[in-house]
Amino acid sequence: MNLFILVSLILQKLMRIMKKKDCDTLFEESIILVKAHSLEEAHALGEQIAIHSEHTYDNMYGEQITWTFRKVLHVFELDDTPFETGKELYARFLQVKKNETVDTVLQKYYPEYE
Picture (spheres, rainbow, N blue to C red):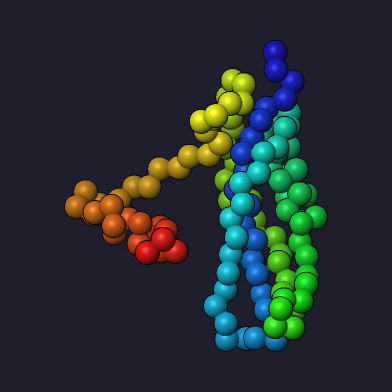
């Protein structure tokens, strides 16, 4: 019996430029691996890791940038096969209307790739 499960978590972090109230918000989604005894423990470990990664720094324009953890978006249990090239770490389904094109889906879910 496997005592640990390997889990891929998606964490959401928010970036703020401290003196700018009118700038767009930037979110970062990062995928991390966690070894835990349960999905609940993996979720808690993911939160701890994300909270420890919060930080503030001055960018090259002298603006103070702050990254803060917002939430664990998803916990994805991995199977116990060995890690090798092509191992799936995360997957999700996007349900779209039957007449939507690939370009429309990309614009909706991945606008940064336009």
